Image (tube, rainbow, N blue to C red):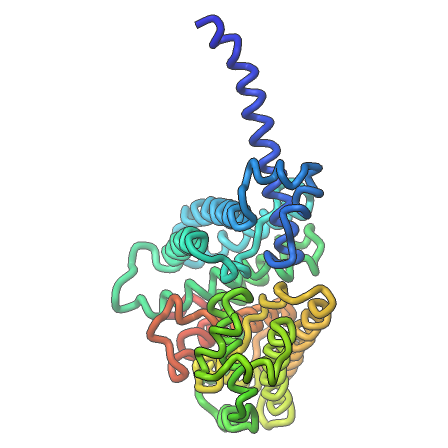
Length: 414
């Protein structure tokens, strides 16, 4: 008994040292995965940041996939704690505002090195079985918690379709702030959170703005675009597979099988997978740029233009020509291509700022922080890529009503 008592302080020190080092590993890994993507970061990179050998890292996590899962699960735990605090508010509006505010409080602590890094969820597609199932189960639980912020306990079969779409919108746009919040000083995060909440609660429309299919929608829907060539078919199939399963899942065999063509046909058009994902990005950029340019040259208010472009890009995801490539796939590109694609993503997002400014000038868009609103619109269009995971009945006909309208008129509107 005396020997056990004497041994316990040493055991405690060993345990504390193990926990401290494990936390350092998770922090470093989350930073690297966020910066370079899961594909671009290695265990040896993580080891170098925490001054361990790669073999020592495997003492904590045998494979990189195990480390990725641990980082993602830690992110869900932190966010679930935030949701739990937000759920204490009495009304849905107060719960939404609290969720966003508390999330930005956490981001400010991370920026100030007062809290460990949170890993984003953009690379979950790269995980194979059984790791993917573990992460998706945790994310689904987190999604349901966010849904209760909007609905309380009033989740029924009658409201589930709209509620799931709005819950996906709230969760992805809030988490998406991790990618653009660094544009602001952490001292301003409270203001940024308040402005983001105001947009999500109050929408973008002025009191006189009208919702509905307009002439500009028809022009964008029938604009010249993708052809029916084998090359275009390859890009569409590859884009869908990358969205569903990540870079690793978009193998030449799977792309060829989906199109019922030979692997030789693939290499006739594209020499390697890096070129493939780059071309998928360029195809998506071309679609977005084409619709934005047509809207800029068309008739109508700023509201008409931002609505039409947003509606048609979301409809496009579920049309025979879709989908668009999820923007987070930029992290799976080689370093020499990543920066240029990321710059293009930001430039296309800035075009939404122009529509919103025009709308505020002509009175069709209510006064707001147009830069934050543009980030939310871009995030909403990107999030629609996986909307069918949460709303299986979504189609090209109802996607805009379910997913675009809540952002433009307020997320609490059923």
